[in-house]
Length: 230
Image (cartoon, rainbow, N blue to C red):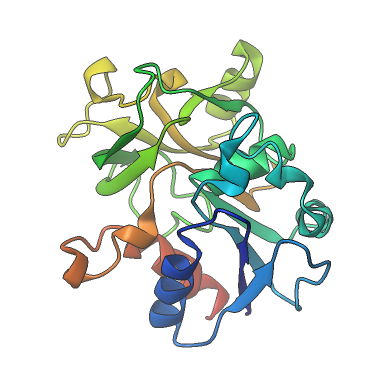
């Protein structure tokens, strides 16, 4: 199993993600450049956090047209695993790989802090080793993390068990007070119908080691690695 991380102009979490994957999985990770058309035989591709193209127009709207995204879209449509974190979530949503949109935070402010997430399903590659209902503490850092979709799409996400995480308090309770950005239904992460594309706003790569005083994010990487490297 080979992992790849794309670097776009303005990415700032690519090396963090590469380091976390290499240290957790014990093998090199391919560094993919946004102008390339070669996924280097990767079995799972990550779009990292950052401010691709300076977040001009809206976050992810320009990066979605980077040359490599043609390959990522085709790869995902053939069943390849793709994960977007923060700005990466915005990019793959703009590319149509996930439903909905990421709007400006309802506070109209950039938010950088630790938040609590409740795991809503164990039926995905990135959560299958995490118990449904388990609460994780993972940092966020975004100005456009307010997830929005139509009522019909929301019902599909709920009915098809495709909501990965929802913002909650430390006890796992869902409510407006635990919602940092105004996301619909407190949604922090989703997957597609094929369950091979994943997007989340919080940064698990910033919470994967004891030296970061938080290892909750490591559970996501272990869920992936325990499956694909088995």
